[in-house]
Length: 173
Image 1 (cartoon, rainbow, N blue to C red):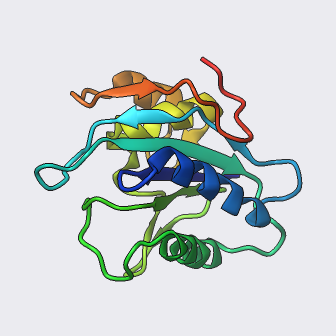
Image 2: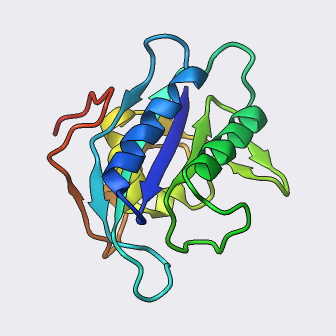
């Protein structure tokens, strides 16, 4: 099972996140892709004046033979297709941010990336949508469920669900 976090705070963020969800379909086994609701979220560790984000999470079973490294490279291509610069400042405003959060039980700690995503468990804007999809999923290395991590999180982040349902949404509440 793959878990991807999506976010945007430049341009038509809702439309961008919805289009990005569609762009992930080719990497999923047929009929396995599911998305959370869309959430409006406060910026976290962003430059002053950064706007609110639209965030969501998507889960799917990876198509046969797809590796975490290959998927990460494809996520970067999708980000660039939506206007994200190849070189960018961490946490700066952006059209699209796609984070590979989990990929089955795989772990990585390389110069290229860390898997599971190292900061995801500290962010409400990640855990809230992820918990809609996979509340009982155990986070590798921490050995707690996503629901447990969400319940234990202490934060002043603001996160609220949008009324618009994205494609493949299975989490309605």
